Image 1 (tube, rainbow, N blue to C red):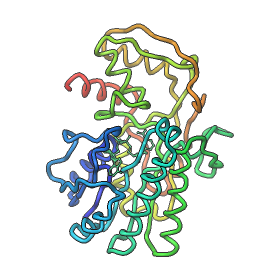
Image 2: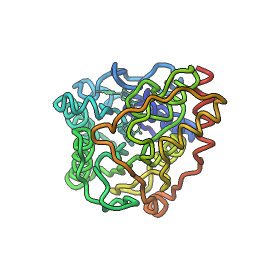
Image 3: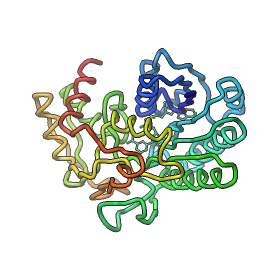
Image 4: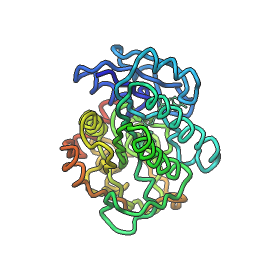
Length: 307
Ligand SMILES: NC(=O)c1ccc[n+]([C@@H]2O[C@H](COP(=O)([O-])OP(=O)(O)OC[C@H]3O[C@@H](n4cnc5c(N)ncnc54)[C@H](O)[C@@H]3O)[C@@H](O)[C@H]2O)c1
């Protein structure tokens, strides 16, 4: 299949590109190498065709005309909760207007399906655990709002133009190539700092738990979604909550040294416990996570050691 991956130079998108190429697909990448994103030229798969442009650009029409994607995997986004709260207009411009540009072109060309990177941020504070796909969506940041709105645009384009979609709501994705200087990605941040012998910051009491899913498993979910889970929204996580303190212990033990901890107050909007129900992913995608946290941490630390 010909598949266009937006954000294919970024952390998750580049792993999606690698697994698609590994499965024999022809892949194009649209990426603008946004200054505050995780897009890196070193992430680029040499067998993918790069179209360096912004998803909001009118010239995206030429990319669709030339590459004629059968499927679009939409991973390009303004992915920072902090930037979204500082500049909600910019967040909406990229995450909504950019998405509409992609969906409009997909619908008017021969593209039959869009796979979309959605987020746990669409749920807001959990009302019950584990969070299933029917959990109310009350996002608490502009970023969470634009990801939720995006899901409604997918539903609209499916109904009005027959453009099939799968929205994958990711938990906390981690693994090689995650930006260790980002605001999220605690495993990348701790790995980078502990390897460098620099202090780490633990907010709140460190007992807050999130659902950490390995990027290789996320890429496999994207591969399965090429011809499954049409017009479905699916949680992609592990169903297991891990605290920040437990991550710190696990990473320090893999690295073989520890560093000073600087304690800080709760970050605005942080949630104490977020764990996904992942039964639907098994039912509609045939997907379940294969990488256990210790193995994923080993792979992540090895990557940062080598870079
Ligand atoms: N990392 C996570 O835990 C997580 C969780 C839920 C959802 N997501 C979503 O997954 C997707 C990928 O996230 P990531 O963590 O790999 O981030 P990333 O920053 O590493 O990747 C995003 C890529 O999109 C590109 N990009 C940004 N704005 C663009 C624009 N206007 N035009 C073209 N390209 C642009 C960036 O250059 C970058 O390469 C995003 O949509 C994000 O919201 C990530």
